[in-house]
Image (cartoon, rainbow, N blue to C red; front, side):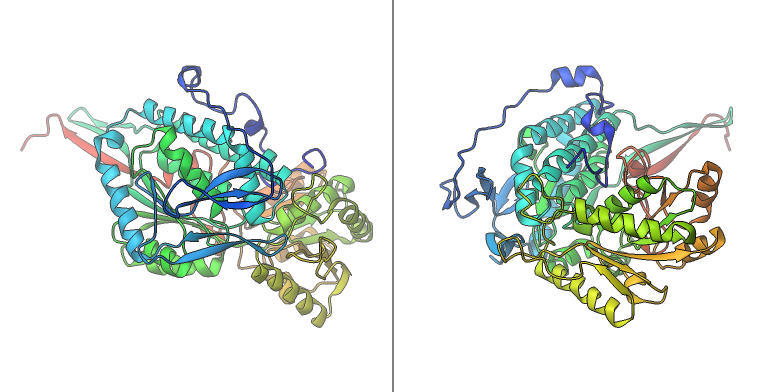
Length: 550
């Protein structure tokens, strides 16, 4: 799959030996870990590890492991105070995988208290920046050693192909943690020259306790995006996993203590957004909230965080355009357009789900795109190597996508292919045939709203000016793609399109070294790259009087 299609975050650095900017001495000093061997059989049995906090599971691919069920607070797994649980569902066959403890406001209080204590404790506060980077690098090494198990869990409760989870998502996770591990001892302020009578300088300080709320489409990758910059700048974290996909984040918790993080530095909570998520957003003991998810939920997070005037980073929805001009390399445009919308079951915030094609190549593009989707988007069991598209993550998401199919047909768009449940994978699961609509008008619901599935709309345009106007006619502004062999035109359009990111002759090949984020109602702030560090530090100014006496 990797050779036939590029992922949303195709980052050469995360598959290269030079991924980390951390010094060689750091790598030499880090311990080498061995992943444990797993017995292959398909069964579920209760573990003897203790007190209903772990269960021994064997995944559909035969990998056996110990699944934590508790909340990870202060380097320990604990039950929630209410005893309430949420159940993770296998979207491939609709069976229950495991039930985990769900946090409520009282559990959030406990996690925040642990994070605050850790933030003030010398074991973390006074740790040298190089030592902090070493712990993070060790964490990345542990993730690498456990990548097969983490990828298995990610596929089991999310539905994404195992080959993608293992070779692409986990590579991104370790790459992101290593990238920020290398930054830990490179964060600095500056001296500002004013006059001989004053020394003025700035210090970059951690914010404090950071509440982080991640989505279900990329659980581990989104956790890494948020953990990396928060930890390398010296903050502590209370991170809530999506209630639909809590399992891989809990397993990640088993590696935190082993990596050497002091108790309370990293805390993982399961729980519903309306309970645990709301408690995090409103909590007086949390200094910052970082959220990735829908625009509607992002608005609510902003409202709740406003009560304590928290620092907020939001990465929300999108309806990103992909423009194909007459002079484009049509073969490349077709292939990248497919990756841009069909990758990860279409469950990508930056998915280029509105394809606008210039009239001169419209018919050729539509024909070639339809053929490429039919030959490449193999829907099937996500644990099978040849599968490109697994199931949607939940029944609710599956039904949401199908509802947009009905909307498109009722509004008069042409359903070119797909648009129905895909039942050839054992007759169960939340599978949807890759869906293409043509003859789509700008006022149609399927053109304007984020569907978040393997669902694309295609329309034609005449001029460059029309293309720009229609690309910008949206409440969103996360990403956009432009296909043209006229590089001057490409650069010109990149400036005119209202989006946080523009790809020229590619789509969604983001990189952990490059800022990621949107404009309009697609978010506030930036993640990744050096820009991601700014969201987790305060810049303090220090004035030293050297001779301006009264």
